[in-house]
Image (cartoon, rainbow over the protein chains, first blue to last red):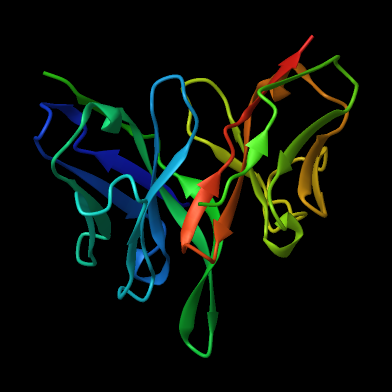
Amino acid sequence: EVYLVESGGGLAQPGGSLRLSCAASGFSVRNFTINWVRQPPGKGLEWVSSFNAAGVTATFADSVKGRFTISRDDAENSVHLQMNSLRAEDTAVYYCAREGTYYTRGLPYSEGYFDFWGQGASVTVSS
Amino acid sequence: SYVLTQAPSVSVAPGQTARITCGGDNLETKSVNWYQQNPGQAPVLVVYDDTDRPSGITERFSGSTSGNTATLTVSRVEAGDEADYYCQVWDSGTDQYVFGRGTKVTVL
């Protein structure tokens, strides 16, 4: 069975840093694109970042570009979101989500939808 | 940036049909996905690629797209269907994923 578990959330000061982790079980993160999606309190969903299955492409929402980085640890079967220069507007629940992925001739292609989600990690940026 | 437009709320009586719409430019050229989110819980994929249902999702949920509008239809609505619903696409022009603002479905 597929599980995603986020950790590393908490309170950070404006300008500070936090590192979120997404631990996967039931599948290998090497074979799927993993995304981060956030939800500010009382608001809707916002895509944040993606690390593709081939491990060569990382993409970011304009709102976090240049401040957030994403990486993958195959040994831990995890994906990490490093959040720097945090702002109050980064306050949200952060979900990691697996993206549907298919393979053609051994190459992975992302399907564009998120088929499994973690339970979320809460991040609060405040002084 | 690409924008998806959803009505903030929809109300429906039990046993009736709820239709939740999502608008966007040339939406029929994109694959639309729908998520259900209950309060305090993670979103759940209920329809992907416009019309397909993941394993375990009731057939009461169905999707369609025509022109600039995608529709999630919930048939024979039950109290448990009360939730927020989000549409989502991948925008090839910006290589980014876009969500609508969500529609809160209230079962009367």
